[in-house]
Amino acid sequence: MVTSRKKLDFWFWVKVVVIGFMLIFLIYPFCTLITRSFFSNKTAGFTFENYIRFFTKKYYYSALGRSLFVSIVTTCTTLLVGVPIAYIMSRYNVFGKNFIHIFIIMSLMSPPFIGAYSWIMLFGRAGFITSMFAKIGIHLPSIYGKLGIILVFTFKLFPYVYLYTSGAMGSIDSSIEEAAENLGSNKLRRLLTVTLPVVAPSIAAGAIMVFMTSLADFGTPMLIGEATWSCQFLYTMST
Image (tube, rainbow, N blue to C red; front, top):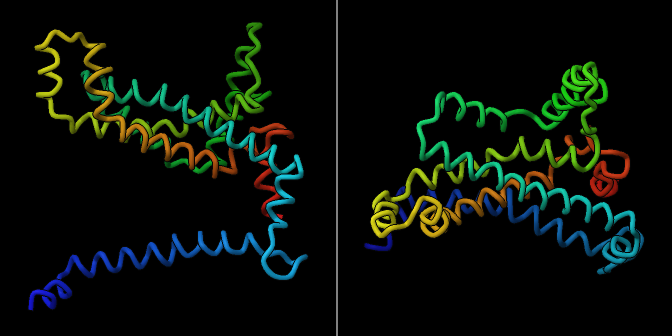
């Protein structure tokens, strides 16, 4: 009787449906992608030809290395921007906090092509801000290239780190920080020894989201990247 009741439980079937969706739409596509990589139209049967071709041609692995470089640097810069903003927003009464929070979230809603084109309209060679500074004799650095990609990715993706970190900081038991303060810890030491270690898993989750999103983003590098930095890896794999 106990077993039959568990099987008829509502949450049991919810778990079954969730696991089924994961198997169909997540695990199966990944497994199919991996298994098909060991087969080629040029060779019959199981082969490593695709991997040999990838690692023996600089065109392929150099593009992947550039993509990883941009994603890793972007992850670091978003942490430098997102974590301090999350701490300030969650610990201090900032003027217009609700509006700032909404604007940060809205930056995630912009499609990659529109977001990248907006930066070009502002800081491109004939951009509004670039032209405005050029009139007074100040020439801004070019937004095109790897530095421009990292800059755009940083301001577009730091909300992931901000949302994860601010959510974790908002759920911290205040008695932990109060205990550290009562023991003589100043604000900086309390931040480094109490607050950050507690929210470290959330910061890591936000960093993973930033890394994977920047690595998969095609629109921004295509518009802002130079010829040698414009997602050669994605072009090659799609052909």
